[in-house]
Image (cartoon, helix red, strand yellow):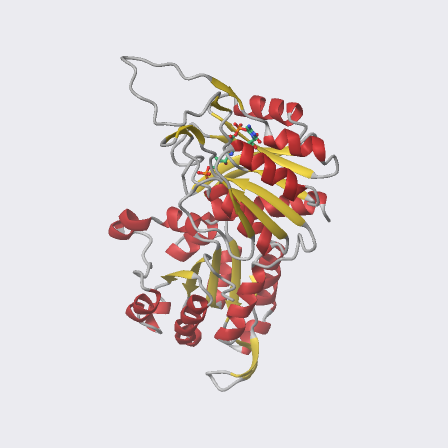
Length: 398
Ligand code: PMT
């Protein structure tokens, strides 16, 4: 099974003899299904040519912070947001020190500061440099900030010394990277997630719906799978591919979604309602295509069932996380829905913008419950989903 399917990884390569092994790291990451973009420091280019990395990754190599052409393609902030993981391999002593001080004088340094993604570092340096108190203190600082250290290995070094400081082998790096995405936070839990729009038929060829793409709900399903949960994804009609390793129930209308939700949530631990359910449906569905009736026409609508409320009412012990899609007074309306729908928590989502919310790849939301609220600044829906699942799991299931 491809453990890094759909994962977006920036491989940062810094200067050192181990840079030649980063070509193999690209290959191994791709073998596991990851999409890889390579960022090289100027020193790295002295050890391995950017062209090699470009050919292997299938994308231009990014190296210059002030390259206007590259910025016009995918700018460094965009690249930083794109990633699920920033992996720096090899990481030189100098670059590690720069990370500690938050230096942004290189493209890689700027991406390190700008990315909301996980960061992993595979150090590579001479054994005496590695054992120096300054290096050890730097590593300690990065670990305290949540950076994952991969290695280093011990053994004979390029300079002839023997000791710790060699970069880990590519296979071992990639296996440790894979384990970063399988955190086990929800192991043994069942999570049901609704996603996408519902379609409410008017006649055999027309319907009422909305612009939900399913990306947010699908990303949450993928994140819950990564966290070790058994996941059931109930999705309206969408054009995206569901994540691996989850049960998918495809539905069309709000009534279908209600039926599937009540059935699957009965033995679940967590219910997440990311779907954009049509609030109303046609009072009657015409058997035949409705004919034109002059300059205007009136369609009679009736209220759809409220799925998330029904699920919360039927399962008082379930953790129910709703979403509130709002275009104004986002927090106020979200809090009102939290209470009215008897939810455990709600994600307030400003959908007045085009760069986040409906159909966008990124999102920016707030988690609101009765005792706290947390802002999740703009990031990819993939990353946001992981952060939401982690917040939920750590706050309520650990
Ligand atoms: O799918 P994407 O393109 O990625 O976009 C993501 C999103 C913007 C759709 C998503 O982030 C989001 O905000 N989903 C909720 C959309 C919505 O319909 O919100 P609402 O405020 O109308 O509903 C509040 C809550 O009640 C939601 O959890 C909704 O799923 C639920 N609901 C609403 C109506 C209804 N009849 N039954 C419900 O369960």
